[in-house]
Length: 152
Image 1 (spheres, rainbow, N blue to C red):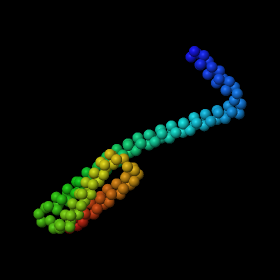
Image 2: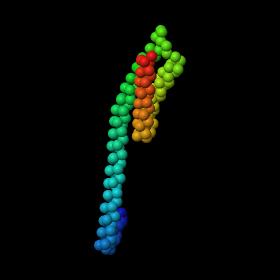
Image 3: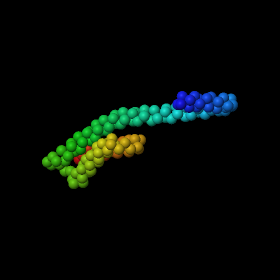
Image 4: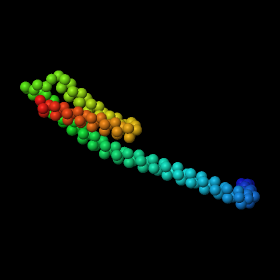
């Protein structure tokens, strides 16, 4: 009985297909081709997105290492300033001490931000731009404070 149903269905499909005009067959083939091309484009776009994510992860690892080195260098510079500040006979005032503490806090915040980005993965371009701006500004301020101390 199931064989008869399958044969009947097959005959119906053959009859239906033979009833389609050549124009209908061509249109059906065009539609199938168009769908296949759209699927291919979607797959390629998805592949590109995955490739970009991997590249940004590698870029982040490099960026993180470079940033951590800058942060460590800032920590060393801040520690040197604190040592000089605590030397007997040093004429460094309270304002100078607050500026050093402020730099230390900013440096710690940078350290925290780089760790938080690793967890949140927010907009990479904006994060990188803002972070570089802030770490460069901190470096300039630290250098000017060091230069100022040398002059005293």
